[in-house]
Length: 227
Image (cartoon, rainbow, N blue to C red; front, top):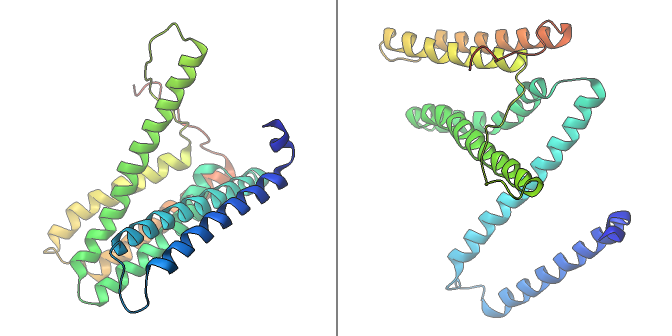
C-alpha cells in the first residue's frame, strides 16, 4: 500500500488498464447480444447505467474543480465563502439560468418559475442535509475509534460562519420576503420592474461581500449568544 502511495504513476496506469479491460468486456457483450435494427430487452438497464455513470463523471469532475479552486483561493488568500458565492454559484447556476429561460420562452413560465425555487431548495435541503449527516457520521466513527469503550453518539457539526456567508443568508431572506410581499401586491404578476429589483439585490449583496472580503471588516461571526 505504501509503495503505491510513493509511486502514484503505477496506480494510475493500473486503474487505467483495469477500466479499459472492463469497458472492453462490456462492449463485447453489448455487440454480441444486440443488433442495429432493434433494441435489446435490457435497454432500460443501459439507460439507468448511463445515468449513474453520468452522475459519477459529474461528481468526479466537480471534485477536481473544487480542489483546484480551493488551491487558487489559498494561494490568492480568498475565503471559501467568497469562492462559493462567486465562482461556484455562477458555475452552478448558469445551466439552470439557460434552462429556465428556454422553458419560459417555450410557453411554460410557471414551470420555469417553479424550477427557480425548486433547484436552490433541493440544493439547500439535500445538500446541507446529506452533507451534514455524512459529516456527523464520520465524526462519530472517528470518536468511536479513539474511545471504543464509549457509545456511538452523534454530535452537532460546527460550521465556521464568516461575514460573507452571513451577508449572503441575509440577502436571500430579504429577497424571499420581498417576493412574498411585492408579487401579491402586483396582482401575482412578475413584471420587468421586479426582475430589475431582483438583479439589483443580487448585485448589492455581491458588492457588499466583495467589500467585506477585501477590507476584512467582518471576518468571522460569533454565534455563541444565539444558541
